[in-house]
Length: 369
Image (cartoon, rainbow, N blue to C red):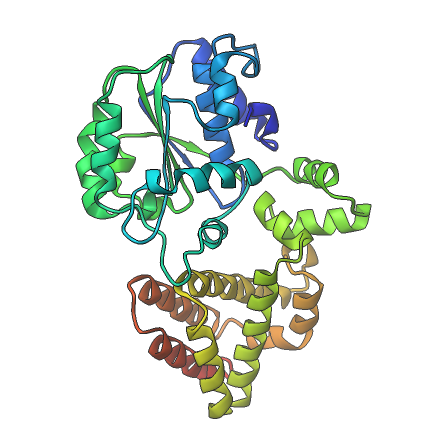
């Protein structure tokens, strides 16, 4: 991953490159922003540039020993920490992680967990990971200028792990750089945040998104424009739309079933839908709840007849013709609150059957307001 491979974000890339030229290399940076906009690719490109033996004006050389090792994510001074399952540490999934990164650059947590067949388990950076991080970073730099630790999704870090790393992040060994990549900064421990230089990574520019879509996929200009609009700055979302991912289709089907059962007030159907959602696995349940929250936003905005502000695919838009009026100023905040509460309860390992039955019954009441 090079800077040239990161879609758009030219000002951020320039900022990072110029800081290296000035000799300004903070010991800890926090890349934060929406999902799918290129935070992890940017962090990897920055790490490569830092350790490139012959860096160019705008990118790493791609030919030195360091760059060749970075091509396979096997540089001895490049370390990764990321959510895993079964109370393991990241190194136990390192071969899978390298394989996954070689195939995917823009992705989300759910896609990674599906790749390692996490099933119902929620991804987490467990407490014992801190011991591995401290052990690695206390070793001398092997052969590069910097020993680099990339932490993907620090918001998934167990509090005990985060607390144990505070001193290491504040005062790391010489020539050590932490690069944290967050999609939910509010849930990163404040004491971790305060020790990092923040870099906000915004959504990808529309024109840059459109160009990237055309480079990777054979779509008509109309299709490309539609995908870029719906993706709203997230390339991973654009890929999902183009590839018509089974997950997105499944979420839409579940959402429609849930809403129709609730509007009809058919308790038997409500219980059937609630049980179906309860059986799809916790990470999928969380992703489904986030999808529902997005749908409520889109259908609420759809009532104002401002199509440029609505991000729906054709199936979602067709369903919204009749459904949008059910999401209005009388219930939109309550719907958002209830689905957000359900998300937190699922994250805390609550009983999924009870949570989703309760949620469906509340939706039954709210949609008729």
